[in-house]
Amino acid sequence: MAKSPKATTSRRPTRKPRASPAAVPPSADIEDLAPSGVLAGPTSAAPALRSGLLRWYDAHRRDLPWRFSAAPGREGREKRAYAVWVSEVMLQQTRVPVVIDYYSRWMARWPTVETLAAATQEEVNEMWAGLGYYRRARFLLEGANQIAEKGEFPSTASTLRQVRGIGDYTAGAIASIAFNEVTPLVDGNVVRVISRLFAIADNPKESSTVKRFWELAGQLVDPSRPGDFNQAMMELGATLCSKAKPDCSQCPVSGHCQALALSHENPLVGVTDYPRVVPKAKPRRDFAAVCVVQIAQGLEQETAAGKCNSFLLIKRPEEGLLAGLWEFPSVLVDERKTDPLNRRKEMDRYLKQLVDIDVEQESNLVLREDVGQHVHIFSHIRLTMHVELMVLKIKGDVGQVCNKGQGSTKLKLVDESSIDSMGLTSGIRKVYNMVKAFKEKKLLEQSQMPTRKRSRRQKQ
Image 1 (cartoon, rainbow, N blue to C red):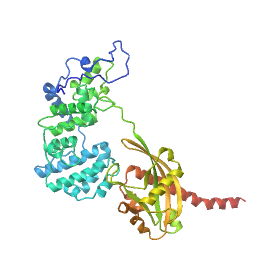
Image 2 (cartoon, rainbow, N blue to C red):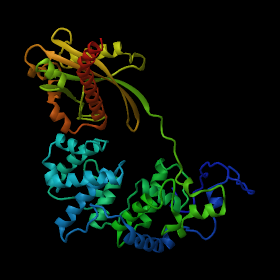
Image 3 (cartoon, one colour):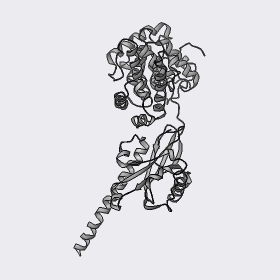
Image 4 (cartoon, rainbow, N blue to C red):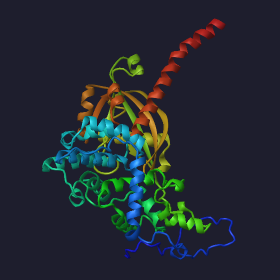
């Protein structure tokens, strides 16, 4: 692949024609459209670009809790490295305002790699609940164990990449920001900035284009302030050089931007044409029967009020989607069999197999009703959950429920107060809140029934 950062020879992004007497042929290349006098490459213009970007960053950077000066010495640098690591992992696919609260609570509980290494996966999952992409939390804990066992935080991008869950981007962030290594990083914000600086119209997801982004970022990174420069590139992409509404008039590097220069010379080209928008793959549609199983242990009125009750939770497999997390009994069903009868058959079969509960033979069924549907969107799956509530009175020792069946080590009963404070995924939390609202509505209806009967008698 050529290293020249001149405008790409690939075709420009498709754009609706604007009213203009001079139309550009659809086969025109970006290189053919490139105006004269704009940034031809980082070699000659890089110093000016670096200084302008760093001046802007020094004056306008956001005050974020993970941006602090490291204390002198190795210990100070490692503390900064840990903070960068945690924040960058949290910031993947998550907005900054959301991360600030999670980061603050995380660091208050686990201020060092060693304290995190001593945590359990369940504790980490509970702290992570709501951030999504739970594999990131598992990798953080596994990586912390690796570093704690070694006794030293890796300080270069190459050694950081050997830590579980740390890839090129995170390694570049930690190495440059905490240890001042002159190494680049490329995330979505940096891709947007570089795409516009060099008018790169190639598919940003293709490996050859990704490689080019890394090469250009490596040529641009400031040799004396690599960490600040990398943060400035991300900051620019997150603020002024936004996806839909870039504020080019305030951009500190707009004089070097090929996309902006092209947009001034040709009405068919816009800054927001870069990077090319790649259509996302249509998410797979899945359907699941979800049964919130409530084990009643008290009197009938206590059961209705939710007292003396336990909920059955099942731990997901250690690999795959939402690995190792707790959820209510769930089973995937065919889209053609999402009617109540078929869903209940599948759920009864599942409970019998996993927990060895025979709904008809070993318990008194107090209540079984459909609660509603909840659609949860994952990055690649659109999951429609058909939710029902099942209230059972078990014949015999309730505590034996989790000691039966094939998956006894992956089952547990939790009371209502515990489930309120558990770190459930956002989808399962939504299901639980739906059930709570359903029960409250049902209780309200039941409490009003005698009143209505008395009022009818009084009218007679």
